[in-house]
Image (tube, rainbow, N blue to C red; front, side, top):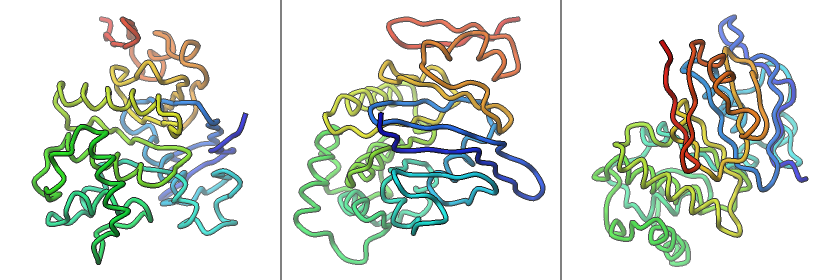
Length: 260
């Protein structure tokens, strides 16, 4: 099986604090992962290492055949799609939605000149697939949170990524918007050329049936990782969250109850 992402014995230390400790993990083509853990466990730091925004203090991070430190990571980063709310802080309110999406082709923000007709056509096609073609003449600043998330997904899909990382993509969404967003994620997973999805969250309710593998992170260390059926248990989640919890499943979706 082809590995498209590999982290080997990676640690990350900042200000004398070891935020990540000897992380090893690999994502293979065709797999869809959920990275799950409580607030402060190191999820965002792990994503920053993978996308090259932070260098690993120890160990190695590899995307395809390229290893961080031995390659131009600005180019390697184009192989990994990232959808995160932090991107929204860099978007100009006056930027047209179609331009926001088109800018994903070269991993740029706030285009200096209008995109080509070819890029516009591709951007409009993705908007239509997202059920958001009505936004084709809108500006970024007037979008709702749910609309922004869908536009950011469209932006990420402008490039042919092998892996698409969704960093807490449902944060700030109301229940209806969340379900609509997750439904679209399920649809994307069925596309013939779908990238491997990596969803980062601390809510089991957001783990979709298409997710095949789960990575549990606690206090900067790997607690457990592997196929969803083996990893996602009440016992494992009680350990990762540091409290007794009961995991329930219905129609392929999960819920969690904190036990007294």
